[in-house]
Length: 178
Image (cartoon, rainbow, N blue to C red):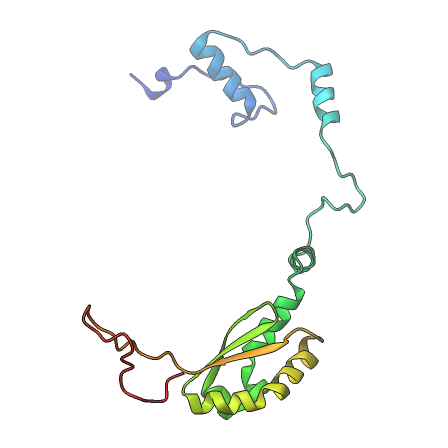
């Protein structure tokens, strides 16, 4: 059996596209013995009118530049202030200085409160003394009333309570934890 004998021969017509819908119609008619019903002009015209075409003039449905689309999304979601805060916190060294930034890092910003974690309680004390200046600088860069309070924490203390027989008020070694 030759490969050409397995499949029926398709008609050779000038301008015929064997990869289009006509090929599917031919295969359908050969396999099922059914000819597909042609679409009437009235049905085709109604389908074209129901589509909402944008036309040749610029329209909101046209493809947009990525920057413009992102700017629109940020505006609609009201993320401008949050993004501005994140940008400033990325450059934490410019806000508190290189030495202080080496021993502290911003951890979060929620409800106009900025949480900062430090390496030790000594660095937490230094930043607490600088808090009014830090808040003023942040509000100057981001916008007034963006940061109302700094919550500065020292390092997380280890848990010295191990087992079920630990003392309720046993505080472990006295060190400079938070």
